[in-house]
Length: 349
Ligand SMILES: Nc1ncnc2c1ncn2[C@@H]1O[C@H](COP(=O)(O)OP(=O)(O)O)[C@@H](O)[C@H]1O
Ligand SMILES: [Mg+2]
Image 1 (tube, rainbow, N blue to C red):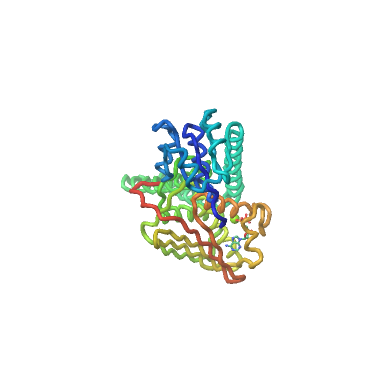
Image 2: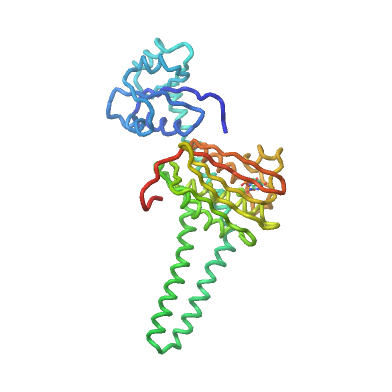
């Protein structure tokens, strides 16, 4: 949710340090990487830059002189480069090199570790509220299995035994599916590279998980999915975003029930994802506060106030935007907008 002009950064050196800087800075919307350079054409950072569509060059004077660069990050570790930069940098550009750039790299690494931990902590805190839902959903098939097994103990007819055995297998599969969903959700987001994620399938997966956490009693579901909606990102993080927004929507309708609408739309190279409820709504003066860490109107144990803060972190990292429209006592709509990605083939995450 930042709108100021991005800071223009040039990265000199595309070894391990340069590549890591590239990966991290690339995720920050307020930074524009105008180019990266290295003497070695096979340097790992150059390959990474190409996949991220960041300009690669061997022409240092052009890179630092002609692109309005505001910050030059020198991670070449080459003293000659330091001397060259001192003599030739444009007067408006700052240089970060040597131990200063190493320190920055450490700080960024530290921050991204904290961020990942916060995300995980919030997710685990949320899982506490799942317990009742899971117990209920596992108990149903277990009762069924018990009944079938009791029958089996008495059954003499082979065909009937066969049929009941199949019913038992089905019931066991259902319980394992519940366990699988939850273990997948509770694990730490894997740090794999961004992939194309099918939004409609992810929303359905989130819906299944949110059902364990909150009661969908008296809630009507409406899905308006556009086929093929896909965005680039981390599937685990996106799941986390959707579970949060759906859970919030359901909480908002706890008193009187209502309608939960999930909508996806692909338009002009963009994907819009809308999660709407007809619940209690948010007062206009509270809207800027809901994204602040620890802002919650929920009872302890039910809300951490970290949900939307984390949602916002993930969405900005994916270069997306989040907007809220809300009317007290009428409901709220959270809209996420991302650049559209090419849908992946079958079996994508
Ligand atoms: N769909 C919604 N309808 C009404 N209020 C909402 C909605 N989503 C979020 N809020 C408000 O924003 C606050 C912060 O949300 P969040 O960061 O997810 O934390 P938590 O859900 O743990 O309280 C909520 O406590 C609630 O007051
Ligand atoms: Mg929440």
